[in-house]
Amino acid sequence: MMFWLLGVELALILMQFLFTSDAAEEIKDVISKKNHELFYLSNINLVDEIWKESRPKPPNKPVRVHDLKYAGLDVAAKLSSLRSELASAGSSAIIISMLDEIAWLLNLRGSEVPHSPVMYAYLIVEIDRAKLFIDHSKVTEEVSDHLKKAGVELRQYDSILSEIESLAAKGASLWLDTSSVNAAIVNTYKAACDKYYHIQGTKQKPRTDGSSENLNGPTAVLKFCPVSLAKAIKNESELEGMRNCHLRDAAALAEFWEWLEKEISKDRALTEVEVSDKLLEFRSKQAGFLDTSFETISASGANGAVIHYKPEPESCSIVDANKLFLLDSGAQYVDGTTDITRTVHFGKPTARERECFTRVLQGHIALDLSVFPENTPGFVLDAFARSFLWKAGLDYRHGTGHGVGAALNVHEGPQSISYRYGNLTSLQEGMVVSNEPGYYEDYSFGIRIENLLYVRVMETPNRYGGIQYLGFEKLTFVPIQIKLVDLSLLSAAEVDWLNSYHSQVWEKVSPLLDGSARQWLWNNTRPVVLDKI
Image (cartoon, rainbow, N blue to C red; front, side, top):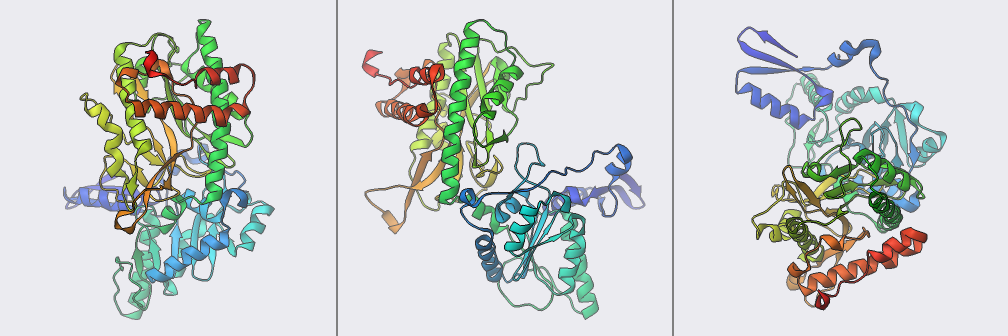
């Protein structure tokens, strides 16, 4: 909402629960340069006032306990580690508002956000206690007992600001990640600190260096939340869950691709949405399936060139046997999260399509095989995936890899593999990332090949600098269509990679299949022999 004030060109009202503190400050900085002013709206939501009784009710779905056999670490151990971080930073409490961080830390899962197994909540962790702010009607007896055992107290969701005020009033130094915590919480704490020091007759500025200097009175410790990195580094139980769910997912995909190829060969007119729905049907039969991990990108022909294309029933295309078909999909299972893209052709691909596909595949292989020293940030590896496209004057306008949660959000940080060199987070053992180079020709076709990988320690003949060298292990095992590969462009090592990968696909996935789907997997994992080309 905007209005005029005397001496100010324009005033902007911002609903501070809807913006992170950093985003709000950025808006404030931009508009102030044009003699505009920002006002925070704290006690009213203008959208709600417009909606009134027609406003949809907030989600109110039960929370569930994430089994320790999948989580790997109990809540007490996670809280203990976080409290050590608090002590090192000289902070007496931290406010966590990222929903996946709360879910991971407390070994809880929800279903209130589409495709993400999280629940709406806030969490405050102090040195000697923890409080979860959540609608109590979502909390089952099992969840209540689980939290009580971990020493986590329940508070009502809408009491978060009064708790922030109480922390400041008792002199608590609060760790604030202003990149994720909303402006309402940060501004409430700042105002409460000002009130505290006004009463004391002193002044205090926020501490931004994270030092453990002992200061009297409430002080904001402005640092990135340590839970993000801890969550990104999967333990062995989490990795085992990811391995297992990927194999079940691969079985569902084998059944799906066998069905789709058969239907296309019958000249069945299937829409992109119908194909997406059928994939969901196959996945839903797998043990532990909960939901898709994002909206499926089912894209035929030119639609594949739209990187985040979303097919709609009223306007989507028929899957054309004579065009490339790109399918980017994923699933949420009780033990893990999947994300996979395959590009196929049901007819005869053109030479141009095969060349572009092959260059994307070469980049995918190069990243998969890369070995790098510890403390290497993801942007350093991005060129591995692009170099073969660059040699032909081609590229793609998205990152190469993103972090993936373990039975959590399909997109997570802080790590990534991208040309965005500002992200200095190093890739570390146990992190899960996607490997998804692509190429998109406007109004014609799109190509993407995506597997999930996890970072592991590599056995190298030397350890220069006395450090470890890292590489990747595959999680995704679904065939890559040989028809689209121009084998004349591949080196012998790249052909070996392709054959080795397909051998692993057959070995790992075939025991989960029978009948025509198993035969399809066999047909699509046969080795390529270069001297017969």
